[in-house]
Image (cartoon, rainbow, N blue to C red; front, top):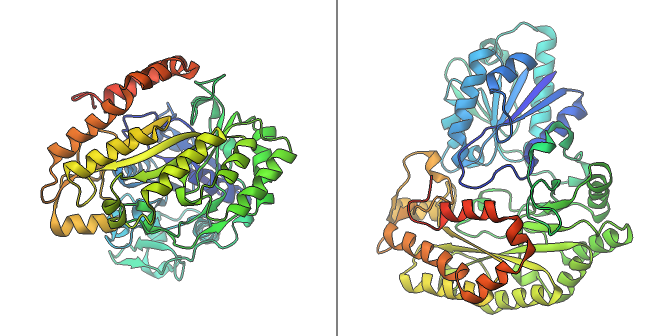
Length: 487
């Protein structure tokens, strides 16, 4: 079959062309494993209108991914596909995987969406395509309406999907269990992307714009249930690939694809520290440690000991993030972070002593915050002094505990799913004495106070990367720090 996978373009005040979409790269790989002819349309880098792309390729099935702020763009993309081709459209990704809000129902009730795939998609997508191919073998000219007819029975018993039959009835099948054997997955199909159109994840000293960046995921799932985190709606069970399996893909990225930097996208990479030690030994032994790599989403501070960080540095680790969230212990406890401030301090000291650059993720406006607690977070960020401090305002994503709390006790300030886009300088909710004006003011203040300290400015100016990144930095500063600078 001809399979088209789409990442819709949506508005963000930051560069979204850093690296190909890993989820679609996996789906493309399992589709090719099936024997399909696969194309990927990444709206962030494509110049051709999606309608023209569809007319030329003539797919038998279209899969579209979407997170929450992206889902309306996904609907528009699905409608554009349907306008030029009678083809089944499948929607997947984080947004429709939320159970508590029936967001999958919201999507499948739209005429442009035929099916929704919830949760991890590889196994469900493979079985879905198998069934479609069997159906088309006997009815090659069949319309999508006939395919979705109740009597067709094509999707009966298929785990992890939601769909609406042509009589208007919505069917929601049970969840599919998380994939247990991650080593059994094929490597992401990066050859399906226009790699020359992407920029890079994190700048390296010798090359900033256009570094050849690739992502890798060495584990899936997160055993922690932070109340604010959208990952808390995904599988609890943490599963890891073997060090040998990760090494094989790592070597492929470096030697076959020419990776100049690698971003590790795990949500909780260091749950098993021994596994990372083994991976580092393999990277060093196979002389792959000359390519810098980073933990894009961060690692657990309470599991980041000095020995592990030094070993990862020797294996090529350039930079890691830590999800600090708050500088107030009471707030940290209330969001179930399961960490204390002294442990966070030690993690940053360990990274500094190991020579690993750090990123600190901080959130302002968590439930129960006051001006005083947010002030403690700003001061804590200055004390930790990471290379990069990322301050965000709390956004209550559907399915999270914070979302339910705000619905009960506060007021959401978002009218559509596109209002969930982050880095825009706008508070997303109000609750009690926590007003939008207060949170926005402290957020702007946090960036100014952190980045405009004289010692910080001097240190930044002395870094070679500062000048290489200057255009990008100025764009980001205008959009995030300055009032009225947002798009």
